[in-house]
Image 1 (cartoon, rainbow, N blue to C red):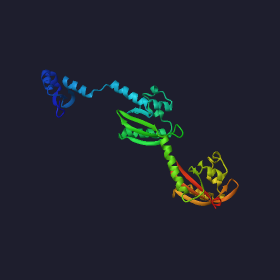
Image 2: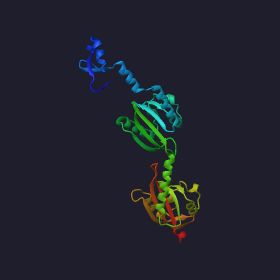
Image 3: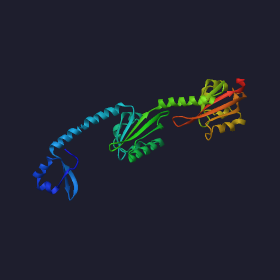
Image 4: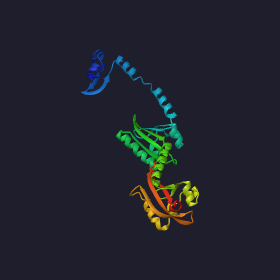
Length: 294
């Protein structure tokens, strides 16, 4: 059978000269035309059998295998049609959001878009449907605290497929590396320092044992308090400027702070800014007490 140039037969010839048409079928498929326009292609039984063998598709068997794969993986999977109605939602997705799979089938995926992050994901889904180009990105979960997901949206037959995989452990490990590197930058050249981590507003996220000793406070007491609360009011504007991200990421200043909540000590404060994989900006902080170091 050749697909180079099909023979053409009009629909009138097909009706009036069936024996002749059958003879032509022995040479290969026939293009059936009507008023000069292609209508359909006619193939002989031998060619049809060969086509079936080439395809060799057992739709039910493939569907069953796909079900087995989708239900056995931890990745969240949504298969959507061209109207962005849900064709399939796997076990991992339904378990995470506490959905029953069957009632979701045929409903619009927009029904699941609750948070601003969900709306952003929906925007990316529509973008893939329109462009035909896959998109991959990472975002913190807006449904569970401290969870981070890698998202893949890709074209799928008659629609798009959405995959989401929890990568929280990986991103937390990267955050620890970033924080450690930033702390090394902050304490470079300093001796006998206490260290901690600050959020963008200057509130303590973490504190070392040495910092707790300098402040005579527990980790729980320090957590969430502002670094400004331990700084001499005369120097608070200096520290406030250090918390700005508009200039150099590494900053240092000589200040006075409240040592053990009792007396003011001269000290050097160093801040090194870094960005976590959750897209949060934080500071590694180092505090060197000159009076103790001396």
